[in-house]
Image (tube, rainbow, N blue to C red; front, side, top):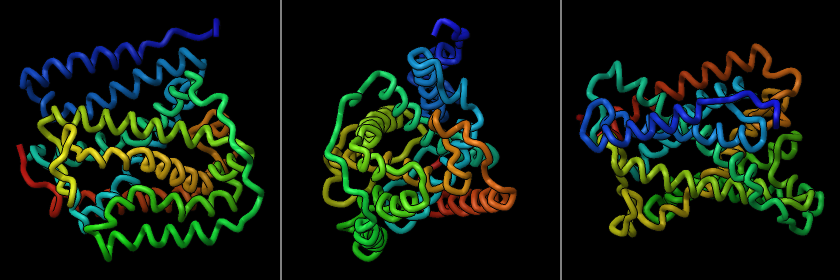
Length: 317
């Protein structure tokens, strides 16, 4: 790694995080209302520089196109969950910016951090050698698990709709079971194929990264003026920050779900993705799929944003 160029984006992120924390606690606008996004983008660049220092290869420095592509994908994915929340009403937003011309870019900037945050954390844990020696008995090469996975995924999809009071947590894992058979069948980056090769390291890394990001999401959200609060049944009274304690169990499978969803999108890009071994693959999405993806993103962003406006925001600054 002697040939590494000096990079400073992590130090800039560290400085921005420190300034944002101080001015937010001092009640200085706009740091009070934009604190969550400032903290998360700072964290992303801090971690990216750490990954670059450890591996000599990071998303921002070496795979910037993939980094930038994760941003609209992240927003689009999160808008799906916002749509589901219209029905479940498990969280709502308070202290939101009143001006629409600032509020809508705020949605984009905040939700754009989800995938970069989780995947950068996953790469950092990998670079640190976590679970490096973990091995598991290889799964026999078979497709027999496809149908059970799809059936479980269908249950996870519809149970929160018909019995939301009991099954609302299932939205944080249902797409794993629906999409993993597709990714595996089409030769994508499959967790089940990792199992066939005797390794679940990526799975373990994602679970750990999800928990770390979940703790940070809730920690930084707690101090922000523009924030979310939860209204979930049964355990809503027992909280750490704004999150009911048992709710932290949803973050690890959520990270796995986002990974599988991203791998499904990569199928339309001829296998290109954010991992180092996939970022340099030739080809990519055809112009048709680019147009379809752009149209789908716009539809999700507009519909998701409108659903937030009508159903999820409870108060403005």
